[in-house]
Image 1 (cartoon, rainbow, N blue to C red):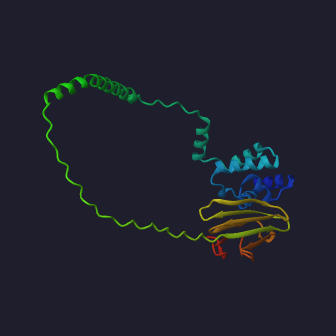
Image 2 (cartoon, rainbow, N blue to C red; image 1 turned 180 degrees about the vertical axis):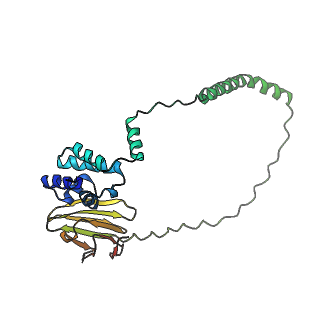
Image 3 (cartoon, one colour; image 1 turned 90 degrees about the horizontal axis):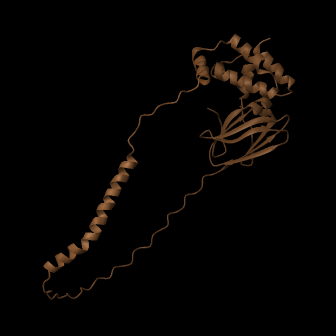
Length: 252
């Protein structure tokens, strides 16, 4: 019995579908189908494949040790995976940092010296001022103040104009209604941020409003009714993109 068939048998014993197992483990349905077909090349390496096997075993309440032992026997770990495992086991040694000069102490000493010099100048300054005043005492010459010149009146400044507010971007309203057994749906924006992700049960409805493109990925498109801006849409594939105008495009 292969690893993939054991994973399939464990999922069926737990009475779970592929979409339900994907929602519980956060593993894509396509990857789960490939793992049950003994195709672990899409996992990104033995390290991540072992992690997926542990997650599946935890959800279906199975012992992961026999599954991991069978996987290690069928797919021996490569050198990078062994090195990564050894790094996680080996404790990290403390790093020694070179001693740096304590600039705070140096700056504090300079500030104390400046404050002391300032106090000395503060107490000696009045005597210096009086000595200089007695030396430079002389009759004050008469000063004539010229008449002020008439100032020209300036026109009032123009009133600032308020710039026109930009028009808000059009928003796309997507209504998802599940039929039949329901399906797992993921909606993301242009930058990959998740707008909605979850399992829509039978008869449940989810509404998503976003001012931009929306990328949709559905597990079972036949169990889903899609309405865009009040109009029913029928996409041709499970993965598609909704433009800001409400049009449907094929996902890249």
